[in-house]
Image 1: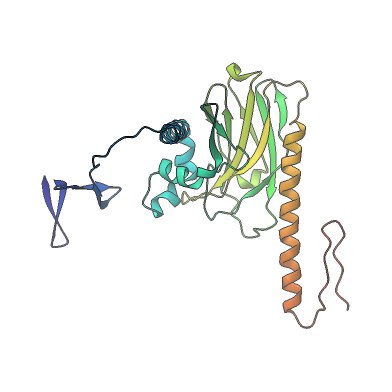
Image 2 (image 1 turned 60 degrees about the horizontal axis):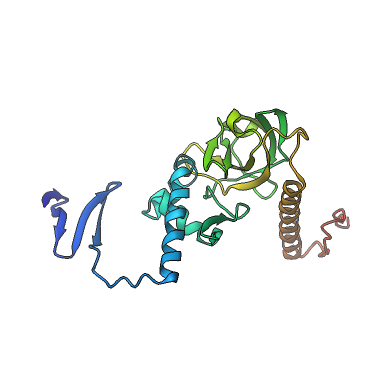
Length: 267
């Protein structure tokens, strides 16, 4: 056991009885030692352990991405990035025939208060290079042009993550080169923003396609995913505009149709 003095208080690290004190990220923490129990090893227990083990392995492969996307929020919660990721995405993982199944559309690789961008449909530049345009998200009017935008790619067959070089938000577009070994394999793509303080935005799932596809564009499922996201954003914006108009007594309220132009207030 090690004893140190901090702010006129004695702080120790090590084991005392059933507890262990330790220093983590500049904070003193305490945890209990594992207790003995009778392991029934039921089918449900073994299934849950297998799910947990495979989910931890998935998070470990994404460690470099999580340090960018979850570092600030996980530190505020006094958790590691992997533990925060597990808590944030526990509904995205399940077992199918003993193997890990992932809901990629709901998976969140980043989280935070930074204003996101609206990503467009990925375009194929060549067999291993893609480009994605992005624009200012209409729901977040206050942004910083120096914020950095990242793309993240995942290859389920190989279990590998790759992250792009960042570009400034003001660039409105990003190009990412991928490994030749992944040509002909399914690829999933996300994007998010990180500010100068290390805080991130919530990530956006951009879609999936086969790398090196001669079609040159994302498949129909990707287009549908992006269309749903754009429609959802428009619906929220319209709802906020309706609420704002009703708070102003000098302007009568108008019902706003998501597919119709906005009505102009009377002069």
